Image (cartoon, rainbow, N blue to C red; front, top):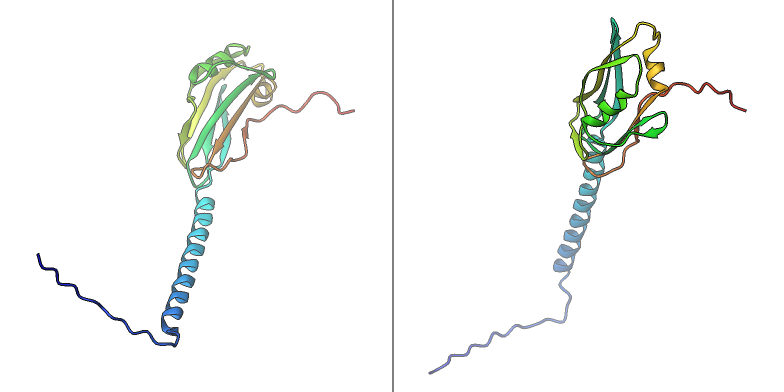
Length: 179
C-alpha cells in the first residue's frame, strides 16, 4: 500500500489580524443584546399573563349566588382551596366540601354549586359559580349573614409559577369593639 502524504504549509505573519478580533467582538455584543432582549421579553410576558381572582355575588327574589371570576389576563392555576365554617376548616375537597359547608347553615337551601379539585386551571375570563342558594326572607343581608359563618380562601399562581395574592371571600365585620 502506498500512502500519499501532503503537507499544508501556512505562513504566519508577525502582525495581528484586527479584522478577525473586531468580528469576534461584534458577535459577542450581538449575543449580549439578544440575551437582554430575551430577558425583557420574558419579564413582559410574565406581566401579560398575570391572573386575578375576584368574587362576584348577586341576589334577587330570595336567591343568592357567589361566583369566582378570573378577571386577569392569564390562566389562574389554583393550587389549594379551603372553606371555613366559624373559623374551623371544613374537611374535604371538590364539590362535596361546598355541600358539607352549607349543611351547617340554617335558613338556607343549596340549589346548585360548582367547585374543583386542586390543582385546577381557571382560564382568563372564565368563572366558577361556587354556590346558588335560596334563603329565608327573615335574613335581611345575606352576604353579612354568610360572611359571619363561611369563609373561602383560594391559593393560585400564574403560568410562570409566580404566587398571586390569595383570594378570600368577604367576611362580616367583627362584632367586637377593638380595645
